[in-house]
Image (cartoon, rainbow, N blue to C red):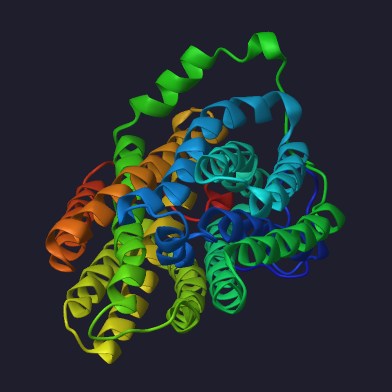
Length: 420
């Protein structure tokens, strides 16, 4: 049975969908996901403003995002193993508060290099949440709810990404970028307070002593499985395609023939709720049909979306962004949840596997995001579009290849959402 509602579950079996514990966990994790993506991408809509304010190139302006995602990637390598000692909830709550406090300092940056340094630190301290979020959900929720819950959490990150951009760009248009980043910091503080109040303590986490971590063995196990390696690469290429398009979008639309203001461009991020919906729906489909069947659908939808953005029509661009966003969140929602389930079934550390996935994810965001801005400067929109399509072709090949890797069936089949 996939959906068992209103039934009490003993510790060790996980919260069932519909229970009070499930609702508190999901509300807290959505808020935590919002903090992460509000602060991670709040400068994306401001890249043209940084270009003007600091007299930097488009590729230079993109460093305000690339250094944050690079810091996050580095932080993940430490945060995942650290959670095995410190615990999941402690790391999640600490990360959202530290990141929000660093965000409060960003509006007071006295130079471009100071802002970049703060953004890098912000990425490092943000790592505590994404490093353990899916591992926490796997431990605390019943198996029948895990794929759906992973989709809801990823949907929360999509909502955060949209709100950060919608908030900062109009305020920057009216005042300047400092006020825009200040508003994002205040929003993140409110979300951090909500996470602290709602997130239940772990019931099923079993901590390890520092001397028992055996990081080398944990890393080898998380890297040894062929499906896990493909999922890591898939995540990095998928987010790379998304960031390439959205980073170059502002530069394209502020110029001819569109001449759109930053505030108006930020309205295009209203497509992000479609990512929230698609992540949640695809998670439910994965519970029923299996992850292998649903993952390629997201890739096809994303390719179609990028192809539409090649048109100069604003309507076609908007529809293309919507399709790309939905396709990306289908792929990312399924892949990120699949990593921890597969790692657990393969006998690897779920948190370490999640850290490797997200490290690849944010390296992809950092590297390809910068390459996309350089491609825009050199080739116009043809450059970012070709790069995004190439990355999505790799995602499609990997998703099809995953169908041929044998599944690992956990011993307790009645609690699994799908074969790993």
